[in-house]
Length: 119
Image (cartoon, rainbow, N blue to C red):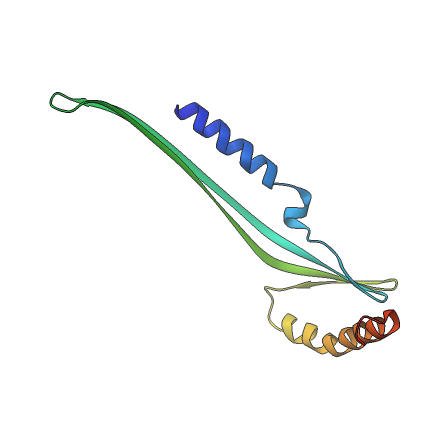
C-alpha cells in the first residue's frame, strides 16, 4: 500500500513538472514580448501503518499528500532586437517595470483599437 501511494503521487508530480512550470506563457503586445520566469518548489510525503488491538481487531491506514509553490522570480522583456532580464528579487526592479507600463499599455490600446475589440 505504501509503495503504491508513493508511485501514484510521483506519477502525478511528474505530469506537473514541465518546462512551462518555470517558463511561463509569453505575453505579446506589439513588438514587446514578456516572458515570466518562475521558481517552482514541489514536496510530497506518504505514510502508512498497521496494528492490532485484542479488543478491536486489526487495522491498516495510509495517506499521502503533495504541495506545489510557484513564485515569479524574473521577467524576460523582448522589444524588437532588445532583450532584458528583470529580476523581481532585486530592489528597484518593480520601479523599472512600472516605468515601462505606460508604453506597454499604450501599445495594447492601439492594438485593441486596430482590431476593433475595444469599440
